Length: 187
Image 1 (spheres, rainbow, N blue to C red):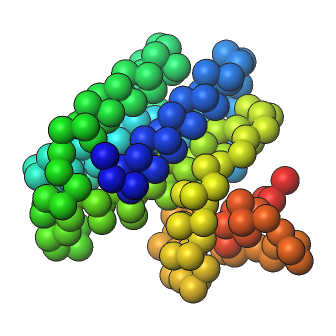
Image 2 (image 1 turned 30 degrees about the vertical axis):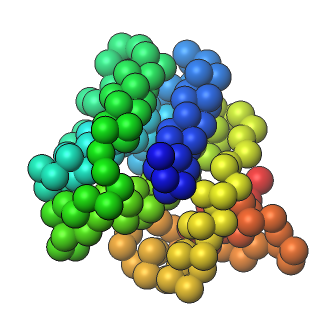
């Protein structure tokens, strides 16, 4: 397994760690994502993995669900565990060098995973915040995403999917720097 695929699997597993610790009474709590509850964030991640699955298997891009919470059944932790198992199977079977159609033309599976890792990485933090849990994000994934996001923070905010960048403390750790660049509190 190559480094990008292994990183992606670690980040998915880290989401699972957060999900397994979310108390039942926190699934409807507000999240750092405007107008989304904890359940919406998890549904967005589940749906996102279905989108990544279609990309890395060469089926091309598909549109996200309009109601992300609809992607989660009655047992959020089980839904995420099944999603992760499905992705682990796909990741073990696909060739990272395979070229697949994407929203941005033909790219390698490795490129898809390298870009897509930011979603589960950042949303693991969002889930933890909504449930009032501590989380340390995967250091390699943070460092990799930070290198991409830092010069483009304004462009990320311009998509409307991320809040405008916030100032990070001087000498902030990479996790806090990345969160601040994506408009999240650095708590």
